Image (cartoon, rainbow, N blue to C red):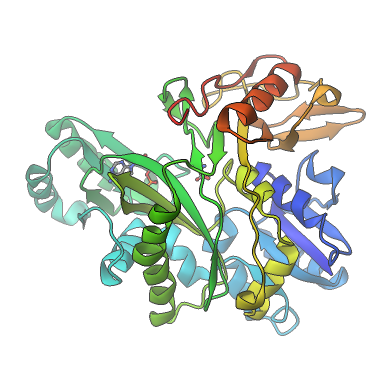
Length: 423
Ligand code: AMP
Ligand code: GLY
């Protein structure tokens, strides 16, 4: 079977690395990919939102499954585009249609969905520039800190958490007035949830589902979870406090009503659901849904899946997921992200990366890299996710950190405290 992966980050390298091990795979292509994906498949220079070029490539290369990495093409309707085309409609697309992608594309939609289907989540109301006064009144009913979310996609920057009521009111006005463009024309204000965050991932064919390993991501640039938000500086799977009893609760209270709710609402959902949870004393509450896998969570979740990922994707495409076996490696996986100096603010690209040969007990997943002749060079803020296994978090991290020392490029930066709160 020939497979096309869309995307170019560490998540897509982890998918490619895993799919390349499948006995069902013939040819693997990644659009546009990076220097890492080129080691396990063939990169093609097509953008993830160039649907016409993707169509031509899929037809001329007999692609049977398209795995959509990032949310953008999903929110833009790539799955609907395939279904509406007689030549493409039999191709399996891993990722929801536009209606399902709204779970990530609109915070207001996802909050309404959760309330309607009884999924535990923080109480909320949404506002626009036409009812700002009501927004101020709602803010006055809440305890600080105040959580303000742009309804639409805002490149991960659309959430403000503010301690001061006056400031929250000013920001509400700014947001509805275009602070994040159209994305913040509607603002969701919600109650602040206390607790520790973790993520649970679900793969569904619209009928049945598999719950993938849990993971915890470290989003801030600085040690001790300080400083600016990033795409993610490291991750650990599984999360120690998410034991069997807790995950059972998550399945009953969150996963089942989510999958059943999609079906009840006529949303035929095929793909990943990334559920961001806040754990408050053993009680899960949903912070957000994403309609894709997380990055760098994928770099610890996928290596722990022992089953054939292509077989599972085939099950999603044919709605036979319930027939598939699903086995998970009991060991702990950790990943430490090497980033370009200056990230998540301005940084330089094109730095030569050395030390790949010195990596021991680890898998380097490429995030922002490209091949220039004999050199692999940096081409993004997040450069490499160094994943390792261990019997304990400490052991796995010791390999990830040792490799983070050995792999080098000018102005390399990484967090030396990934997992600090779990050890
Ligand atoms: P979101 O894009 O909705 O995931 O929000 C981004 C981040 O803001 C989350 O990962 C949390 O760390 C934080 N956050 C969002 N909503 C809440 C909430 N209701 N209470 C506490 N923290 C939140
Ligand atoms: N690591 C967080 C995300 O992928 O959204």
